[in-house]
Length: 84
Image 1 (cartoon, rainbow, N blue to C red):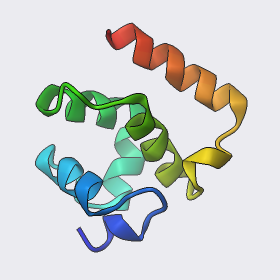
Image 2: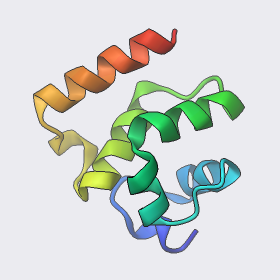
Image 3: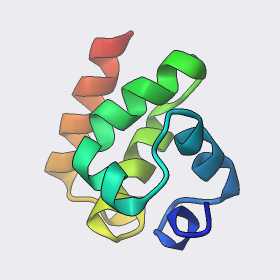
């Protein structure tokens, strides 16, 4: 968990959720991608929100989720809606 929590947007709670779906390193998160990681988390936590998806993408891009480009946020929003 210590390595995951060094990423932006990843606190202890999100790190535990990632570990629950066998994502234990920044490399694994990056390889899996935010959408697939989010889908895996959503299977064990059906209440996972769009903020979590943004946080995962921000962590992969090494920036706060609030700094994600508008196009990226829109793409993630469409993906999130497709899961509903």
